[in-house]
Image 1: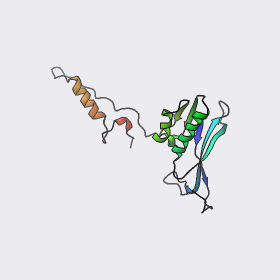
Image 2: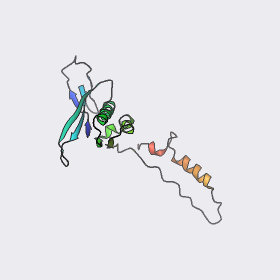
Image 3: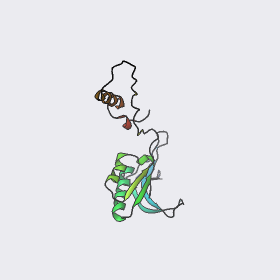
Image 4: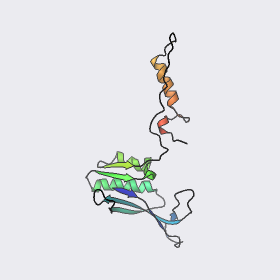
Length: 162
């Protein structure tokens, strides 16, 4: 399954109901219209052809991730076969990925931001000289816990690179 949310720009329709801003990047110009969430499936293995399974307009009060999660949840109920849902880095967030904790037949393959870090900082290497006092195991554990916490007190695996 492939999931995308392309914009449908409608600048001339000033009175169009529930029209929202389609700006995605800071440097992009502001555009107005609707976003649509497409959930599609690969038609044939090894090709780029897709067929739509579910298409929904993204309401301005909802995010792309919320609508995508709803589509995945309904697809899992509708089709009990195992499937992989592929999404771009915009959907590598708690809102979209949380649905995969409750669905039984869908699995996520999501490209994540390049600044996201999933590993911890290396543990300190303890050098011992002849005759120096050895540290106890509890002291080593306490030192590792302090050094692995980020500036906000969270583990370093949740920090992003600057």
